[in-house]
Image (cartoon, rainbow, N blue to C red):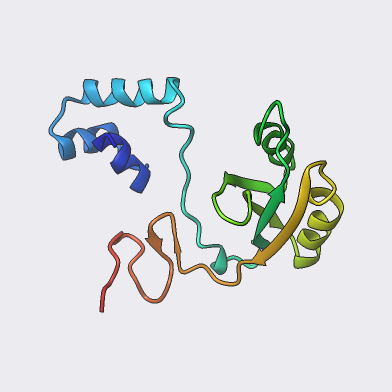
Length: 160
């Protein structure tokens, strides 16, 4: 992976000037590369890593595994489009193994997510089986340790 992409994927808050100094490249070059990555869709957006365990109104997150029957003409793509369209879905992955999709969803309560699975996801034509796993605590997210007394500005992990 390109060094610019590697650095931005770990911490997207670096300025063009900071990236220039880190990589020993001119600011014009760094700026042009980032613009090209954005225009070609390699960079799709920028996000902060939020420790939702510290928020009182964060809701719940669940991973729903789906076993599906892909369509003969479109394979998994048509099903992926239907599943992505639900506003509760935050991420969707095609997987290898006993389930075909891993669907990350957000809801206000466990009951909301359970109802979403029972009344909406499981009713999608082609969905054969579901398995829902609720996230209870986040220890690491996006490469950042959210556990214990670690300094959030220090992206390194402590090894004992």
